[in-house]
Length: 262
Image (cartoon, rainbow, N blue to C red; front, side, top):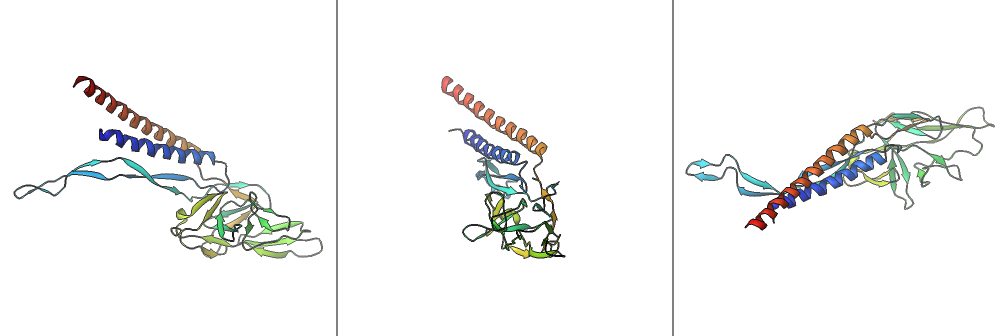
């Protein structure tokens, strides 16, 4: 079988994955706190016909080798944790992390997950939770039922004003976590990430301190997806896919000619 068929086949497979990654980015262009991904490509093993530096004659070495590649593959999808834009909402339970860091929440099995999505709400007990699944923010923060206003400082301190108190009462503190390699986190969906051996252990800290970003109340971080950039990447991926298809078509015509004329 002609090797170009299999080489081009790897190109088609790789571009299908690339286009899937791009389509997921575009689909999440309006998802709060979403971080775009990119496909990472790698060339496959080479068939070495002549080794560079091999002896070609007495006291003579080959200046170049003869290596035939076997195609390409996608080896990883890499998250890019660049800062998204600020969307002002004026909702007291909407939080934005301006800078590095993640909010920490507790999953039903007791393990920790991390998110950049600060669209929080209250459950039936007054605890601050995530809106989609109701995961409790860590450490737990409970808002009194008679609270008339909620204020969150840039350092994450949560205070409330109640009718029976002259001064605001501190009820909790948002804790921040960061990782030495955020791109190594495992994206589990629901705007959540979990720790892996590649991300490193979480580094706990206070917002605006310890190298963490500050918290902005009444605002949200939009997706960092640039739709125009993604559409350009889509066109590029489509053209590469077409070129690999044309190589397969050309090899098919060559084999057809040999089959019919020899």
